[in-house]
Amino acid sequence: MLPEAKLKIVQDLISTASKEELLWLNGYLNGVVSTHTQTNGVAVAAGTPSVNRITIVYGTETGNSKALATQFAAKAKKNGINAKVFGADQYKLTDLPKEEYFFVLMSTHGDGEAPDAAKKFYDHIEAGNFSVAKMKYSVLALGDTSYPLFCNVGENIDQKFEKLGGKRIVPIQKCDVEYEADANGWFDKVLAALNEKPAAAPAASANGHATPAAKKVGKAAYTGIVTKNIDLNDRGSNKETYHIEIEAEGIEYTCGDSIGIVPENDSQIVTDIIAKTNVDGNKSLEFKKEKFTIYELLKRKINIIHLTERLVKQYADATGHDIPAGRYDLLDLVRNYPVKVPSQFEEILVGLNAISPRLYTIASSPKAHEGEVHIIVAKDVYEKDGQKRFGLCSDYLSKLKVNGKQNFFVQPNKRFRLPADNKDIIMVGPGTGIAAFRSFLAERDATGATGRNWLFFGEQHFASDFLYQTEMQNWNETGVLTKINVAFSRDQKEKIYVQHRMLEHGESLYEWIIGGASFYICGKKDPMSVDVENALLHIIEQYGKKTIEEAKAYLEQMKEEGRYEKDVY
Image 1 (cartoon, rainbow, N blue to C red):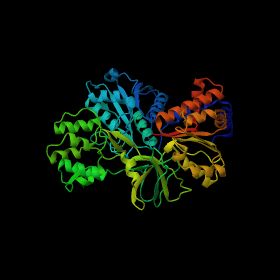
Image 2 (tube, rainbow, N blue to C red):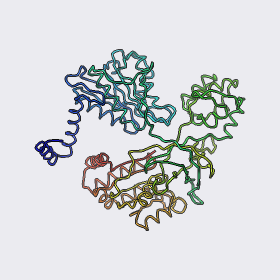
Image 3 (cartoon, one colour):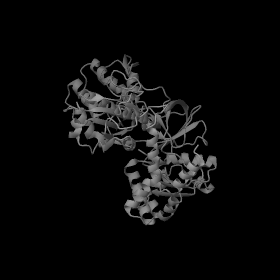
Image 4 (cartoon, one colour):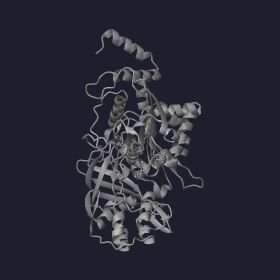
């Protein structure tokens, strides 16, 4: 505790400081504290550092790597080290051989791919037509252990720099979805290394990877029983949207979380592949250090649709066929570019990727639906080569049988949470984006939350596509749902979407926002979430009498306050 005289000085300073001054003060104090020896962590040396300049490059799909890069640059500067920060798309690639202290924060997404903005940077490093003999480096790799190629891009960059002559000064740190502690620990080790102080780093393996500390993974796995699977769309709809309920003993989750499901491949397609390649479906092969029959691999383990261009090229190289660049299903490849002998296909098969889990925002409430989890799944239908085809997981889930078992895991989402019970919320969730807000409303109904709730929902047709219509109307009648505005785009000549409804109610919506309401978006990233954000900026600009720059700054402030959150895909 501070003596009374010192405490009064601090209180006087805080009471008269602006928000910007408080933020500066917070950072300054963190810097002061970080220069003191920590008894429970890595100490960062005080005094003049041995290195005075570093470069940090980030590659991000969701903004996490960028946020960490900015945070770490500020931390470095507080320790007397000038840090230059670049997005991977802004970095001058010809500067790589000149770099002395170089740190990469890189995300992996999809099938082990680099973020869109980082592809040119990643491809240049992978080509490797240069030397980085002067470089001392380390890599922070962000990913999701749900996916087979976890942190693939960061790992490849780390290994490539070593091959090109770079010296790794801190082992690569691979981070799962709950990355903050690991990321901060990594940068503390970097600072210690830059200050020539020994860091209590984990033992590194032969390939330079840090041995991960034993810790609880942020995802809990369950086996549940399917109790309901119904199509929410009525007759005449162009869509199939399934409401699925799963009972699972001891399930724990929070509103805003998702569940991950690994689908199985269609049995007929598996049978056709076995027939076309003449392999023995009962023969056992090793895949990821486990043994499975070829049928089991094709049915439950290996992704056989929409193969990446890299895997298609591997298939072409193995079979000797000239296959045009593109993404193909495995069945299309074995039909049009057949293998010569079954053993050739077996070698190709074990080199393919595992099936990735698909994430679905939870549509239920732990308070209102105890022991259950609900999801909404829109069946993905598309045409290829004149044939109607379906998305792997949405087709699989649409066929789940009631009373059948289903494995899944809970994926936490700490960036999409309800505020305090007395706070107002505005929710924009067209289509399956309604999932999170059915969860929010059910939770607020069950807990008796006093905050107001305003929903914007959109779909194609009122008569056939108003998902959860009866529930929404009941919540509206009982006062749980304070306001609801709907947009059915195909029910009139001119298409109307949720952003149009927002603009129609712009003045009232702005009053809610300046009154402290939190704003949520859930659903398709493009173009919906972009259009909704642009509409929100227009409303803040118009009714707040601000310039567009001031409106953007206000929206950034809402993000910092945790009042503007998105769950988009």
